[in-house]
Image (cartoon, rainbow, N blue to C red; front, top):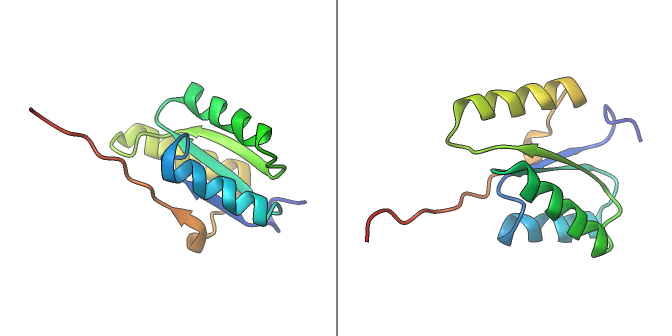
Length: 104
């Protein structure tokens, strides 16, 4: 399907946990959109995409490295979406923030 016509669903923190589950469930229910799996580490994202395939996901999955606290990576992710798809369906942007424990 032409990406200009299909939905683009962007999920942050998607290499594990809730973000991974969101892509898994959504892509199994609706394989037509392209799912953009955003992960802090690209390799972890690639491994997650492989696991999704093993779990039966047939939807198109694109992996992008994105640490939402890194302005350069945010700009690169936006550029990737603009260049690759020309759009992002706003209603399909799922931000899945992680947390960090600081101190003891």
